[in-house]
Amino acid sequence: MSGKNKGDGPQRSGPIHGRNEKRFWAREVFFVPVLLAICILLYFLPLNARPLWDTDEGMHAATSKDMLLSGDWVTPQLNGEKFHDKPVLFNWLVAISLYLLGFNEVAARLPAALLGTGCVLLTYFIGRCMFRPTVGFLSGVILATSMEFIILSTVVVHDIALVFFVTLCLFFFYLGYSRERGRRTYFLLLYASAGLGVLTKGPIGALLPAMVVGLFLILNRKLSFLKEMAIGWGILVFLAIAAPWYVLVISKNPDYAGHFFIKQNLMNFLSSQEARHPRPFYYYVHLLFGGLFPWSFFLPFAIIQVFQGGFRKIDERALFVLIWFGAVFLFFSAASSKLSPYILPLFPAAALLVGTLWHELLKSPTKRLRLGFLLSAIPLPLIFIPGFFYVLIQPPIRLEFKYGINMLHVKILVLFMAVIVTAAFFLLLKRRYRSSFSALAGMAVFSILIFILLIVPHINPYRSTKGLAKQMDALLPPGEKMVFYYDLRDSALFYTDRKALVLLTPEQLRNYFASDKKAYCVLDRNYFERFEDLKQTAFILGREGRKLLISNSRPPS
Image (cartoon, rainbow, N blue to C red; front, side, top):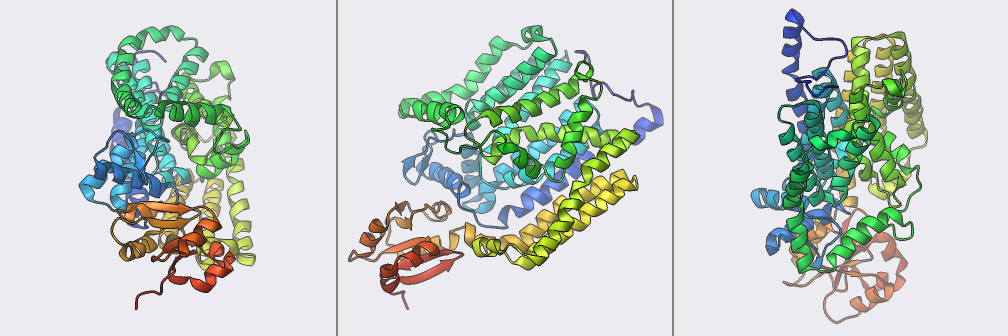
């Protein structure tokens, strides 16, 4: 790849001229609108489909609400205590949204939906610049309809913001690497994006793009290109964006640096004893396949295809995307603490790998490609058809017990998915590749809509404390804390202006209910059933899923 590539970058099949070019651009004008339509369906329409869920979503929304109400935009707080687990940028975005739209679910989730949509569009532009617009479009559709990406674009968590800024960093790097004109500007924008990434999730916001860029230059034998990257000015830009808030929060909270940088970041990565979520090295393999569904089954073949001519003959654009994917996956696999959202920054790269593969099939369906796709797609019907009969014969009753899910709705959803993935497989057999791709994308879109319409309403009482929080808020005198047993139901903090007290032992709960004043507590029904003495004296004032609101006083008539 020379530094003089412009527009679509170098084309594998040669330039497009004359009448073909006009037809090509006539199609391309629909690419961004189609991607936006998919994002509106999947990310924006569901914003108000459910209350905030426990846990994490309610926590981050409540933290942002407290920030807005308290006027303290430096030190995040949760339930009246300093919250040092995350940096501040995502909370700022949510707080601004709450200020503009009010304290509601749409406002709390809107930043995630906007950032998710931004990632989809960035993936389109990266694919367009690296390869051609069709690759960008296919990759954008793949990312937009990947299950994990849909989920994290509709909930109040920081991870989607990290993905956006990491992707933005790598996009600006590629523009600066491939184009001489405007190179300095692109690299300064790279450093600015890294600064915003660090404000979003800490050092990882700069470490991930630096790792990808460094490995790419090393393996491409172009370390000398670092001289072109305006590193001196870039560091100044990076520090100007990332440093001021960290300086302010550490000056106001001297314990912040040790807690966040050492405990939350370094020890969570290095120490299995200190890790909050210890998992084995292979933990992300199955999560990647589930999170990237329905496109994950084509990912192994996409990686194999990159190495088709041997490592030395890998196109450097494909090498960049492959390093992006592999470095992030291996980095988080090596960490002691693991959670499924951590690997989300590799999803745009995975989408680009699979999108490039689908483009090759659509453009030049060789015998090798056709066979590879069929072998990749075989697991889809082999999993879903038996899966439907399994659900039909032996339905997962635990889902109904734990989340209130109607088994009929589960059967409808699994049947729909089984029919569509089987149809997509047979369309591949019939060499109707565009129809097969469209079937898989449509299956993802409509599966989510079915899930939202049929299943989510049954889950809401089990995952949110909105109803009981409002009921308890009406019963308590001004200024008194809500009380929970064993677990903090953080969505309750968002829906009321109260703080919460968590009772952690049976003795604390008994003492609380033995007092002369009126006592109200929310707890899981399992815990309530264990306390025979409490069952004899307490009154149940409300139910929500498996949660109960109990009191030592009779309910008002």
